[in-house]
Figure: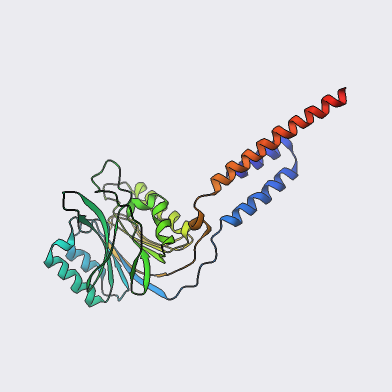
Length: 301
């Protein structure tokens, strides 16, 4: 957008099409460089169910899952506001449910460290128990959200590798990018987005997940407590969603992808490229101006 603004101003002031044409060509080349590299074709369709309900209790969450057979079930952040593994009765019930459904379950819970401190946790489990965890790297400011985790790896289950970034992790670019670099083929994301938010806040926050999906070329399924629960494709398009402030579940199909976008490989380089380009252009103007001044003075002599 900045380049377009500069080009239009050049044309208005200078009325020289070569500036606009040359600048347009540069913009076109930059845009093509920023496009994702070709990603590997999908291996097979991944079926998943995402549940939207805020602090509903385990039985309500399990009831909302429904009867459709899926590979993965995703519950919201803080679906269990305690360490679910510390209650043998509840843990055994969840394992039995996962085993019966032959599904991997991803849910928001806590991990107690033992000294009173804890981590906001995304937990993956199946009928045998825990498969993997992710500790929220970016905890919410001025909020009791646990200690910040440091790692951003992937979970391997069901023949796939997937990421479990949590809610506010996706407001930043680094966690999803690191998980994708580590081999994540898609993302199953527990999120909260509390019911006391306004509708505008819910929809605004929902947009950030779309950015992360598009930057890294990965499908992303978000299960939010009060919305927006959504499925996003590798281009950042919202494929399906549940309206905010409603309980429900949706069963969807997404793709497991490989390959890395240029952004995933190198990060956000566009701003730096524009800064360098501006410095080169200013240098050119200074040198050319000095040259014209010198030439003019020699002609006068």
